[in-house]
Image (cartoon, rainbow, N blue to C red; front, side):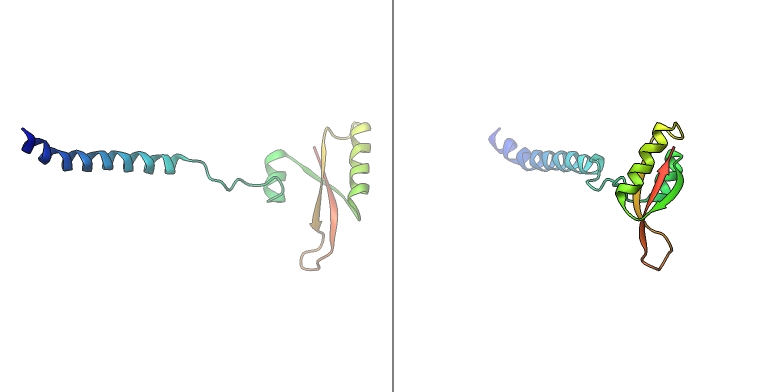
Length: 101
């Protein structure tokens, strides 16, 4: 009976290792990615998904936020956001762009 146990031990070890490997491989595939998109990663996709409408351009963030708050008080929009963006592509002229909805 001892010799039979010695023959089964390697087979059991291989089967156990296979199950463990299959379990960890499945977990690794099912795990969520560490790279989640940031809120400002893509202005175009965010506007299209959330129905954000582009507003005016401002030289500084404070002016943009002031205009955004004024629009909320005047009931022109429910919420707003200000993003620093290049106004004219390729000219490196960054300004603050107001978006609202």
